[in-house]
Image (tube, rainbow, N blue to C red; front, side, top):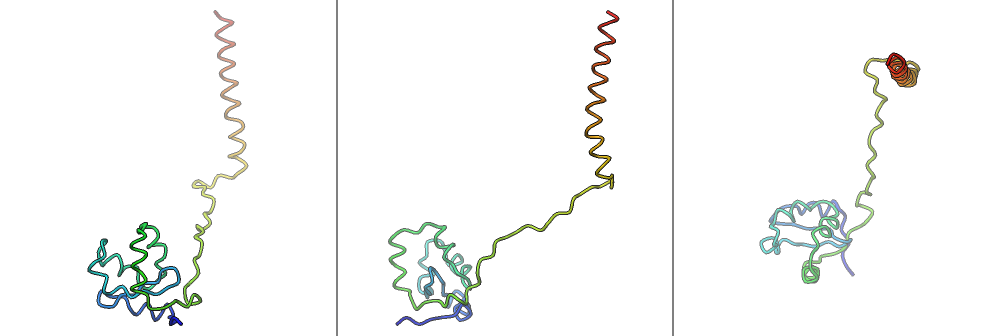
Amino acid sequence: MAKIFTLAEVSDHNTSKDCWLVIDGKVYDVTKFLEDHPGGDEVLVSSTGKDATDDFEDVGHSEGAKAMMADFYVGDIDSTTIPSKTKYTPPKQPHYNQDKTSEFIIKLLQFLVPLIILGVAVGIRFYTKSSA
């Protein structure tokens, strides 16, 4: 039976001399692989202390790389110790009205200004047509 680790226990292994990762609910001791990793050891060390499944999947590892993982397997992670993902919700933005003009006046102007422009255009057209 595989040993069960908490995320806190796995997080203690976060250096280039002792590096453990959590991928797909399994714990891997990748310390011996750091020098051979094609992406460099910094990539692996930066993924410690969290669920690195997304980081691993985003890279698109080959089947050969996935098969190598069995050599580094040390146990399973206690999934209750991994924080749940929270969905980001942006903060509510207050309505911005710099000059503090009342809503009624703004709506009135939005209605009247186009009517005034239309009236002036019709008046100019009518005045210039009749005088020609």
